[in-house]
Structure formats: C-alpha cells, structure tokens
Amino acid sequence: MDIVRELQAAHQRGKDIRILTHHENQGVSASRNQIIDKAQGEYLYFMDSDDVIAENTISLMMQNIHQYEAEIVFGSYEKIEMSGEKYVYRYPSLQLLETDALASFAYRKYAGIQASACNYLVKTSLLRENHLQFIDTDYWEDLVFTFDLVTYISRAILLPNITYTYLCRENSLSHYQQRNHIPKDEIMKNVAAINYLKRSSSLLYNKVYFPNRCYNIVMTDFYIACHILKRRNNIVPSISNREIKNLVQHPATWKQIGTFRHSRIKNMLLFLMGKLPSFLCVSMIWGLRKIKKLI
Image (cartoon, helix red, strand yellow):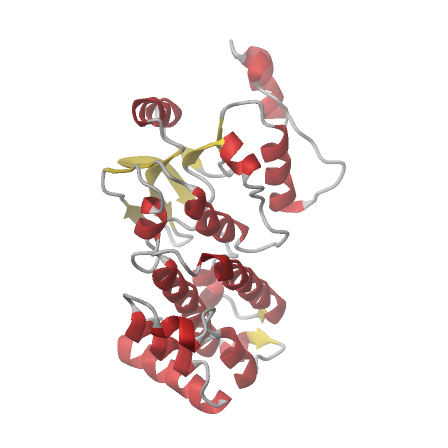
C-alpha cells in the first residue's frame, strides 16, 4: 500500500488514483465487488498485484473500444508456472459484434476463453446494470465471473497482442499434484464454484451456445474428478465414489439434451456417465483418463 501511495503522490495523474480499503481482510471477491460498486471510470480492468501488465495494454484496449464501440476487449496472455515453464495463450484477431457471438466463441471448445477476470477491459455500466458480482468463495471466483459475463456481451474484441503475464499460484488445480497433503475442503470449494455455473445455466436453455456451455461445465467437473483420482491418497479426509459421481452431474435434463442441434452426442455421453452406479461411474472416469492420458 505504501508503494501505491508513493505513486499517488508522485504521478502527474495521482489525483485520479483512488485507494479503497477494508477494515478486515474480506477476500478477493469482496474487494472486486467494492470496486465495481465504487469505480468512477467508464471501463474497468482488474489485475493481480503479483502479475505483470504490458506497458501499452490500456491504451491499446481503449483504442479498440473506441474504434468498434466495444463493451469489452480481451488481450492475449502468457502464463508462468511455479516450475518456471512459460505458456502463451494467443487469441485470434477477432471482432465479435453481434449478440451471443462472444459466448458462442468462448464455449466453442473446452477452455475457449480465459478463466481469469484479469486482462480484459469491460464497460462498468454493463456490470452494474446486469448486477454482475463475484461470488463469495476462496476459489475460482474469476472463472465463474468471466464464464457468466460473456453471456451479457454484444460487442467484443479479441486481440492477439500479449498484454498480461500470469504468475501461477499454489491454489491452481494443476498444482494439486505437487502437494503431499490436499485438504478436501479446498477441492470442494472448486466444485461449489462449478455448481454455481450449473445453476445459472438453467436460464440459458434457449441460447444457441447452451449445449457447448453445458459440455464445458461438465468437462471441468471431469478434469477435477481426474485430479481427485490421481491424488486420491493425498486428499484428507477422503472423497468417496458417490461424491465423485455427484460431481459430474449434467446441468441439462435428458429431454433438453435431446433437442440440442449440436454437441448432442457428447452431452448425452456425459449425462449417462453421471447416471451410472457410483463404482461404474468412477471406473469409467479412471479408464478415460488412462486412455486419453488427460492428467
């Protein structure tokens, strides 16, 4: 905080820097919700304090905002794992300027859009008018927020420019495998975040992207289940077969899936997997994991 105050005092636009404080540590979600409520600017950009932003990020995004009258602009990004490995995630150069175009792009494949709330510039009024807030959780609040946010966007820009560097942290799902002791409660908080997305999906049945959204959600559950099975002996207390089966329940009904115009078969298979007896369901997940070498 002292560094921010020094910048506030020294920068030529220091008067525009506002510091919002909490009397106690209420977590990331509460802090970001306060920012949404209190922000005075027309657009919002979130970033984590230990990540790195490219020098021209905001000016580049604002240029595209004005050029296309966009509600949101996404930048491409790179991710540095705790091991030091670097991965680049580059979007194509796209102007998605029709209703549901961004959501359709985001859900077109698994992990089709970033899971973070950082590295996009979004219109503040859009968040407020649609009452978009971060859910109260310690894990994956970013994923839930962005996954739902795209359904409200009509005009979006994706940039191929690398504008952000993520420095991965220990609470990433991929880092379960690096620890000898994994609290069950930590995993179940991730599961609760995905369950929130399942509930919010019920309002989107008539959308063209609904089948792919459902598939993405259940595949996220599937990958969590794979991680659980791989590190099962390290999870305390243990997770039962029934709990793993409950994890992969489909957000749509069988009747709804039967009306899907695309992605019908793969959604049917995921639905049926969640209806198998617990032991068979878990055996199927384990077998698919081994065959596909997913984890």
